[in-house]
Amino acid sequence: MLEPSQNDQLPPIPGKRYFGIGEVSELCGVRPHVLRYWEQEFPELTPAKRTGNRRYYQRQDVILIRQIRSLLYEQGFTISGARQRLGGEAGRQDADRTAQLVRQMRQELEEVLAILKT
Image: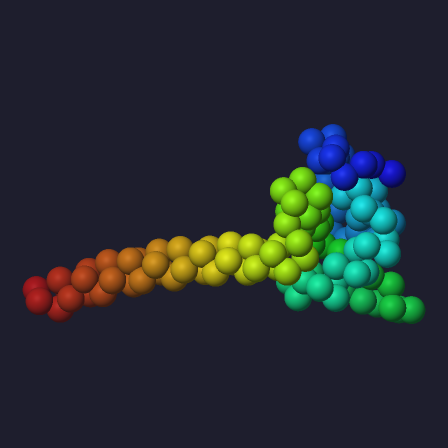
């Protein structure tokens, strides 16, 4: 098992669609019980559950787990601080996407207006 301070030595994420909890544990350097606990604490972390309540994580889940791990183990955040930080980042990304969408819609509307004026 990897130590929490060895984030730069985590293995690359394979190009698979789904990962079991054991694989994610190895890829992220945290034990399976920690992953199950984080699922309760971080609403963004929701692996698919299949037969027998087995968890199947996707690539974005593995990336999120690595972010959570970094916030907690390397940057010294508490669980609630890490939760707020992740929520803030998601909010900023949503705001950026919304602003980009508004700019694109405005440009398209200006083009339509130019066509209507001719």
